[in-house]
Length: 313
Image (cartoon, rainbow, N blue to C red):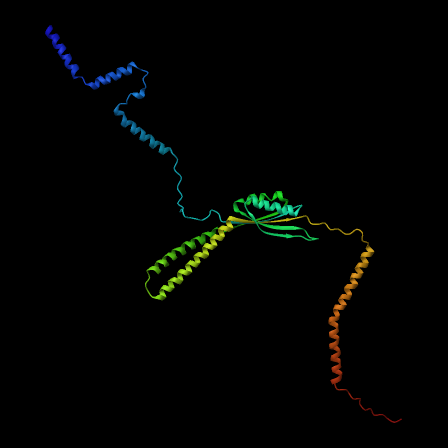
């Protein structure tokens, strides 16, 4: 019995010595987890075998999000150096306004031009004793303030008429831009030829003349482009303000008999004036007739009276 007990103790000691420290750590962690259920789960490291699965799941979720996202809008293929404006429209217009006071209306038109960021280019005023007093002011204003200027005409007075016109010069602008681009390419080629050409003097002079012609065309095209840009950016509005027409009536103090005598005297004066004016035609004509008659009597032969045979009584 003693021998068998000693053998059992020796075998138990060998088995406990062969047990790995990792098993003890796992058992300790398991015991600690079971003994403290309130411990934060984030402190317990996940098993190493689950890391690849989490990475695969993360990649799959990214793919799903990308598949569910809307497609990105296509990027514009328009070159960055394109200077063509979206709209090339020249706006002009005119307006007629009836006002009570001409001076006050002119001042209001000037204030309107300042409010919309423009200025008064031309001004003309017509006035007289028996005619309607009026003034015409030409406003230059930014094209994007056109609607505000048209709306601002109402407080000035009674708007009688408004005329607007728009001229689209986009086609001409595009054509001139293409011409400038082609002319600049030709200019670069001519400059290269002029720098590398070592031929006769006549050939060099011909290249220089062609280069001067191309540069002149480029300047002309660019000047036209600048003019179109200026006209598009600045609009023109002509505002005509006028006072009410004067009311003229017949004079009530005149009599019918008096007006008849006045008309008779006017008719007599008109007749005498016409008669005097006709003398300038009748007197020279009478002189010519008298001279012609005198010459005819002097130079025409006279007829002699024929002899008549008579019988003696």
